[in-house]
Length: 242
Image (cartoon, rainbow, N blue to C red; front, side, top):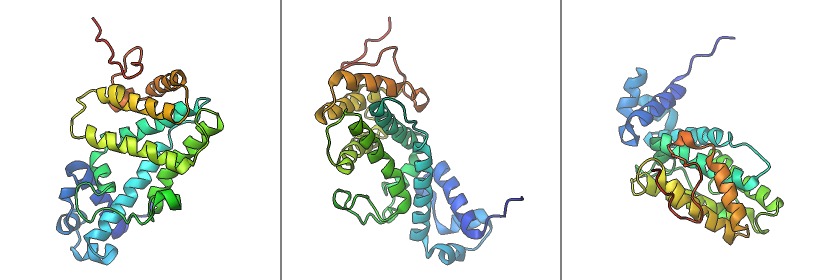
C-alpha cells in the first residue's frame, strides 16, 4: 500500500526536526520553516497556533523518539545493570541528539518547554505531556525490578526513579558543557561512581553494585565512552596503559 503523502502539519514537524538537528533550536522560526515546505508563514499559525505550539509539537516528537530509544534497553537477569544501562542510554540520546535534548527540556529557548504541570512526588508522573510520561515510566519499571530482586530496599519506586533521573540529567547538563572532558571519561570517573554510591545508599551491596556497573558499561562503546579492560572501582581513576 503506497505511503500517504504528509500533510502540511507533518511536513512542518519534519522540517522543524531537520533544522533542529542541523542548526539547533535557535534556527527555528516561522518564516524559515514555511520556506522549507514551500508554504506561507500562516501554515505555522493554522496548524499550531504559532511557534509556541510548534515547539511543543517538536518536543513531543522528540520525547516519542526518546522513549523508543530507551526501549532498546533489554531485560536481563541483572536488573541493576539494566537500570544503569537505561541511564547510559539516556545519556547517549542526549549526547547524540543534543539539540533535541535542549528543546525537550526548554534549555535553549524560553517558551519551548512543554507544560510541566505535575509534581512527580505526589502525582506519579512528571508532566501533562503523555510522550514524556511514557519515557519516564521506563525508569520506575526498572527500579521495581531491582527492588523485586532484593537489590534495593523497598521504597516508593517513583521517588527512587526521581533520584536516578536527577543524577543522570544533572550529569548530562554538565557533560555537554565540556567540564568532564572527552571520550566519556566522566562516565567512568563521575557518573559511574555516583551511581554506585546511590545504589549502596538505596540498600545494594557495593561489590554487587560495582559488578552491575561493569556489566552496564559493556553496551556503551558507541556512546563515546572508551571503556578500559576493567572498569574502575569505587571511583578510583583507571591507570593509563603503558
